[in-house]
Length: 286
Picture 1 (tube, rainbow, N blue to C red):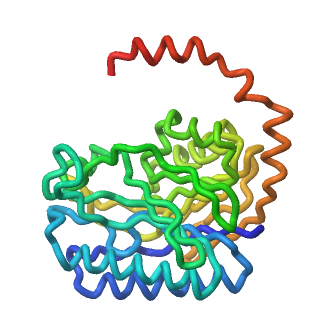
Picture 2: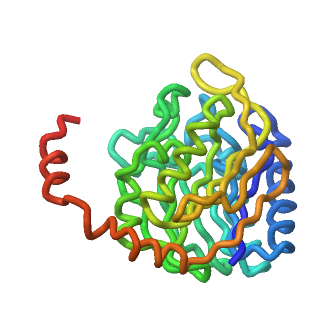
Protein backbone atom coordinates (compact mmCIF):
# COMPACT_ATOMS: atom_id res chain seq x y z
CA UNK A 1 0.00 0.00 0.00
CA UNK A 2 1.24 3.48 -0.86
CA UNK A 3 1.07 6.25 1.75
CA UNK A 4 1.95 9.92 1.39
CA UNK A 5 3.00 12.82 3.58
CA UNK A 6 2.18 16.25 2.18
CA UNK A 7 4.34 19.34 2.63
CA UNK A 8 3.95 22.95 1.59
CA UNK A 9 4.47 26.47 2.98
CA UNK A 10 1.44 26.87 5.27
CA UNK A 11 0.28 30.50 5.31
CA UNK A 12 -0.93 32.18 8.51
CA UNK A 13 -4.60 33.11 8.31
CA UNK A 14 -4.45 35.17 11.53
CA UNK A 15 -2.40 37.84 9.75
CA UNK A 16 -3.30 37.34 6.07
CA UNK A 17 -6.93 37.29 4.90
CA UNK A 18 -5.94 35.43 1.70
CA UNK A 19 -4.03 32.70 3.52
CA UNK A 20 -6.85 30.22 4.08
CA UNK A 21 -7.78 30.13 0.39
CA UNK A 22 -4.10 29.71 -0.53
CA UNK A 23 -3.71 26.83 1.94
CA UNK A 24 -6.80 25.09 0.59
CA UNK A 25 -5.49 25.33 -2.98
CA UNK A 26 -2.03 24.07 -1.98
CA UNK A 27 -3.51 21.17 -0.04
CA UNK A 28 -5.86 20.25 -2.87
CA UNK A 29 -2.97 20.16 -5.32
CA UNK A 30 -0.86 18.00 -2.99
CA UNK A 31 -3.75 15.61 -2.25
CA UNK A 32 -4.52 15.19 -5.95
CA UNK A 33 -0.86 14.58 -6.73
CA UNK A 34 -0.60 11.91 -4.05
CA UNK A 35 -3.83 10.25 -5.20
CA UNK A 36 -2.63 10.21 -8.82
CA UNK A 37 0.57 8.50 -7.62
CA UNK A 38 -1.53 5.74 -6.03
CA UNK A 39 -1.57 6.76 -2.36
CA UNK A 40 -4.29 5.23 -0.17
CA UNK A 41 -3.52 7.41 2.85
CA UNK A 42 -2.29 11.01 2.95
CA UNK A 43 -1.20 13.10 5.94
CA UNK A 44 -1.32 16.91 5.89
CA UNK A 45 0.83 19.18 8.11
CA UNK A 46 -0.21 20.51 11.51
CA UNK A 47 -3.00 23.17 11.45
CA UNK A 48 -2.54 23.20 7.67
CA UNK A 49 -5.61 25.30 6.90
CA UNK A 50 -4.76 28.35 9.05
CA UNK A 51 -1.42 27.79 10.79
CA UNK A 52 -1.23 28.99 14.40
CA UNK A 53 -3.64 31.59 15.82
CA UNK A 54 -1.21 33.88 17.66
CA UNK A 55 -3.08 36.06 20.15
CA UNK A 56 -6.53 35.28 18.76
CA UNK A 57 -9.11 33.52 20.91
CA UNK A 58 -11.47 30.73 19.97
CA UNK A 59 -14.11 33.41 19.46
CA UNK A 60 -12.36 34.39 16.22
CA UNK A 61 -15.06 33.35 13.77
CA UNK A 62 -12.88 33.90 10.70
CA UNK A 63 -10.21 31.45 11.87
CA UNK A 64 -12.75 28.88 13.01
CA UNK A 65 -14.69 29.30 9.80
CA UNK A 66 -11.56 28.65 7.74
CA UNK A 67 -10.80 25.54 9.81
CA UNK A 68 -14.36 24.26 9.46
CA UNK A 69 -14.30 24.83 5.69
CA UNK A 70 -11.00 22.95 5.43
CA UNK A 71 -12.42 20.07 7.48
CA UNK A 72 -15.39 19.83 5.13
CA UNK A 73 -13.09 19.97 2.10
CA UNK A 74 -10.84 17.21 3.47
CA UNK A 75 -13.91 15.03 3.98
CA UNK A 76 -15.04 15.69 0.41
CA UNK A 77 -11.58 14.95 -1.03
CA UNK A 78 -11.54 11.74 0.96
CA UNK A 79 -14.88 10.70 -0.51
CA UNK A 80 -14.13 11.88 -4.05
CA UNK A 81 -10.68 10.28 -4.30
CA UNK A 82 -11.27 7.24 -2.08
CA UNK A 83 -8.53 8.24 0.39
CA UNK A 84 -7.85 8.18 4.09
CA UNK A 85 -6.91 11.81 4.85
CA UNK A 86 -5.34 12.95 8.15
CA UNK A 87 -4.50 16.47 9.30
CA UNK A 88 -4.89 18.80 12.26
CA UNK A 89 -7.19 21.83 12.54
CA UNK A 90 -8.10 24.62 14.94
CA UNK A 91 -11.23 23.88 16.97
CA UNK A 92 -12.97 25.91 19.67
CA UNK A 93 -12.22 24.76 23.22
CA UNK A 94 -14.39 27.30 25.06
CA UNK A 95 -16.43 25.56 27.74
CA UNK A 96 -15.20 22.10 26.70
CA UNK A 97 -12.74 21.46 29.48
CA UNK A 98 -11.52 22.71 32.82
CA UNK A 99 -9.60 25.94 32.29
CA UNK A 100 -10.17 25.92 28.54
CA UNK A 101 -11.44 29.51 28.55
CA UNK A 102 -11.48 31.04 25.07
CA UNK A 103 -8.66 28.91 23.73
CA UNK A 104 -8.43 26.52 20.81
CA UNK A 105 -7.86 22.82 20.55
CA UNK A 106 -5.32 21.54 18.04
CA UNK A 107 -7.45 18.69 16.69
CA UNK A 108 -6.30 15.76 14.58
CA UNK A 109 -9.04 14.46 12.29
CA UNK A 110 -8.94 11.40 10.04
CA UNK A 111 -11.49 10.96 7.25
CA UNK A 112 -11.98 7.70 5.36
CA UNK A 113 -14.15 7.72 2.26
CA UNK A 114 -15.64 10.97 3.50
CA UNK A 115 -16.52 9.65 6.98
CA UNK A 116 -14.86 10.89 10.17
CA UNK A 117 -12.98 7.99 11.76
CA UNK A 118 -10.73 9.65 14.36
CA UNK A 119 -10.69 12.83 16.42
CA UNK A 120 -7.91 13.63 18.90
CA UNK A 121 -6.95 16.87 20.66
CA UNK A 122 -3.21 17.46 21.12
CA UNK A 123 -2.33 16.77 24.77
CA UNK A 124 1.25 18.12 24.87
CA UNK A 125 1.54 21.87 24.27
CA UNK A 126 4.89 23.39 23.28
CA UNK A 127 5.52 26.08 25.91
CA UNK A 128 8.62 27.65 24.23
CA UNK A 129 6.30 29.12 21.59
CA UNK A 130 3.53 29.76 24.15
CA UNK A 131 1.10 27.19 22.76
CA UNK A 132 -0.33 26.86 26.28
CA UNK A 133 -1.53 30.49 26.11
CA UNK A 134 -3.73 30.00 23.05
CA UNK A 135 -4.48 26.27 23.15
CA UNK A 136 -6.20 24.03 25.67
CA UNK A 137 -4.61 20.61 26.13
CA UNK A 138 -6.62 17.56 25.22
CA UNK A 139 -7.62 15.22 28.03
CA UNK A 140 -7.81 11.86 26.26
CA UNK A 141 -5.33 9.51 24.62
CA UNK A 142 -5.39 9.13 20.83
CA UNK A 143 -7.98 6.53 19.84
CA UNK A 144 -7.22 3.45 17.77
CA UNK A 145 -9.59 3.03 14.82
CA UNK A 146 -10.13 0.70 11.89
CA UNK A 147 -9.84 2.31 8.44
CA UNK A 148 -9.67 1.12 4.85
CA UNK A 149 -5.88 1.62 5.12
CA UNK A 150 -5.58 -0.53 8.25
CA UNK A 151 -5.68 -0.11 12.02
CA UNK A 152 -4.64 3.46 12.73
CA UNK A 153 -3.90 5.99 15.44
CA UNK A 154 -2.18 9.37 15.54
CA UNK A 155 -0.43 12.16 17.40
CA UNK A 156 0.55 15.78 16.72
CA UNK A 157 4.07 17.23 16.44
CA UNK A 158 5.45 17.77 20.00
CA UNK A 159 3.66 14.58 21.11
CA UNK A 160 6.57 12.71 19.50
CA UNK A 161 8.76 13.57 22.51
CA UNK A 162 6.49 11.64 24.90
CA UNK A 163 6.88 7.91 24.24
CA UNK A 164 4.29 6.90 26.83
CA UNK A 165 1.58 8.33 24.56
CA UNK A 166 2.42 5.66 21.98
CA UNK A 167 2.41 2.64 24.31
CA UNK A 168 -1.36 1.97 23.88
CA UNK A 169 -0.85 2.06 20.11
CA UNK A 170 1.79 -0.66 20.35
CA UNK A 171 -0.46 -2.73 22.60
CA UNK A 172 -3.27 -2.39 20.07
CA UNK A 173 -0.86 -3.50 17.30
CA UNK A 174 -1.78 -0.62 15.02
CA UNK A 175 -0.57 -0.68 11.42
CA UNK A 176 -0.14 3.07 10.99
CA UNK A 177 0.42 6.14 13.14
CA UNK A 178 -0.13 9.53 11.49
CA UNK A 179 1.70 12.63 12.75
CA UNK A 180 0.95 16.12 11.35
CA UNK A 181 3.64 18.61 12.38
CA UNK A 182 5.25 22.02 12.14
CA UNK A 183 8.73 21.05 13.35
CA UNK A 184 11.58 23.58 13.17
CA UNK A 185 14.60 23.03 10.94
CA UNK A 186 17.02 23.68 13.80
CA UNK A 187 15.73 20.51 15.47
CA UNK A 188 15.52 18.44 12.29
CA UNK A 189 17.80 15.72 13.69
CA UNK A 190 15.48 15.36 16.70
CA UNK A 191 12.50 15.01 14.37
CA UNK A 192 14.09 12.21 12.38
CA UNK A 193 15.31 10.38 15.47
CA UNK A 194 11.94 10.62 17.20
CA UNK A 195 9.86 9.52 14.19
CA UNK A 196 12.20 6.57 13.65
CA UNK A 197 12.26 5.80 17.38
CA UNK A 198 8.50 5.78 17.77
CA UNK A 199 8.18 3.46 14.74
CA UNK A 200 10.82 1.00 15.94
CA UNK A 201 9.76 0.86 19.59
CA UNK A 202 6.06 0.77 18.69
CA UNK A 203 6.55 -1.75 15.86
CA UNK A 204 4.29 0.14 13.47
CA UNK A 205 4.67 2.46 10.48
CA UNK A 206 4.75 6.21 11.19
CA UNK A 207 3.65 8.64 8.47
CA UNK A 208 4.80 12.08 9.60
CA UNK A 209 4.14 15.28 7.60
CA UNK A 210 6.26 18.41 8.19
CA UNK A 211 5.73 21.70 6.36
CA UNK A 212 8.10 23.88 4.36
CA UNK A 213 8.64 27.67 4.51
CA UNK A 214 8.99 29.95 7.52
CA UNK A 215 6.76 31.74 10.01
CA UNK A 216 7.02 34.18 12.91
CA UNK A 217 5.83 32.41 16.05
CA UNK A 218 5.90 32.51 19.83
CA UNK A 219 6.24 35.07 22.59
CA UNK A 220 9.39 36.55 21.09
CA UNK A 221 7.95 36.58 17.56
CA UNK A 222 10.78 34.35 16.37
CA UNK A 223 11.08 33.53 12.69
CA UNK A 224 11.10 29.74 12.48
CA UNK A 225 12.16 27.87 9.35
CA UNK A 226 10.60 24.52 8.47
CA UNK A 227 12.56 21.99 6.40
CA UNK A 228 9.90 19.96 4.58
CA UNK A 229 11.48 16.74 5.88
CA UNK A 230 8.36 14.60 6.08
CA UNK A 231 9.14 10.97 6.82
CA UNK A 232 7.59 7.53 6.40
CA UNK A 233 9.32 5.20 8.88
CA UNK A 234 8.81 1.44 9.02
CA UNK A 235 8.57 -0.82 12.07
CA UNK A 236 12.10 -2.08 11.39
CA UNK A 237 13.68 1.38 11.13
CA UNK A 238 13.67 1.90 7.38
CA UNK A 239 13.02 5.32 5.86
CA UNK A 240 10.43 4.35 3.25
CA UNK A 241 10.25 7.96 2.02
CA UNK A 242 11.80 11.23 3.17
CA UNK A 243 11.27 14.84 2.15
CA UNK A 244 14.12 17.07 1.05
CA UNK A 245 12.26 20.38 1.14
CA UNK A 246 10.18 19.85 -1.97
CA UNK A 247 6.59 21.11 -2.21
CA UNK A 248 3.98 18.42 -2.82
CA UNK A 249 4.15 14.90 -1.44
CA UNK A 250 6.53 12.11 -0.53
CA UNK A 251 5.38 8.57 -1.23
CA UNK A 252 6.26 5.36 0.61
CA UNK A 253 5.21 1.76 0.07
CA UNK A 254 4.06 0.08 3.29
CA UNK A 255 3.79 -3.66 3.91
CA UNK A 256 1.86 -4.30 7.16
CA UNK A 257 3.16 -7.86 7.24
CA UNK A 258 6.66 -6.57 8.05
CA UNK A 259 5.42 -5.08 11.34
CA UNK A 260 3.50 -8.24 12.19
CA UNK A 261 6.57 -10.39 11.68
CA UNK A 262 8.69 -7.95 13.70
CA UNK A 263 6.34 -8.31 16.68
CA UNK A 264 7.00 -12.07 16.60
CA UNK A 265 10.77 -11.76 16.12
CA UNK A 266 11.14 -9.07 18.81
CA UNK A 267 8.29 -9.66 21.33
CA UNK A 268 8.43 -6.31 23.11
CA UNK A 269 4.89 -6.62 24.45
CA UNK A 270 5.58 -9.98 26.08
CA UNK A 271 8.99 -9.01 27.46
CA UNK A 272 7.99 -5.64 28.95
CA UNK A 273 8.40 -5.54 32.76
CA UNK A 274 4.93 -4.30 33.66
CA UNK A 275 5.56 -4.72 37.39
CA UNK A 276 8.54 -2.33 37.41
CA UNK A 277 6.83 0.24 35.23
CA UNK A 278 3.76 0.19 37.48
CA UNK A 279 6.00 0.94 40.46
CA UNK A 280 7.74 3.77 38.64
CA UNK A 281 4.44 5.32 37.54
CA UNK A 282 3.05 5.14 41.08
CA UNK A 283 6.10 6.98 42.46
CA UNK A 284 6.35 9.60 39.70
CA UNK A 285 5.92 13.00 41.44
CA UNK A 286 4.94 14.73 38.20
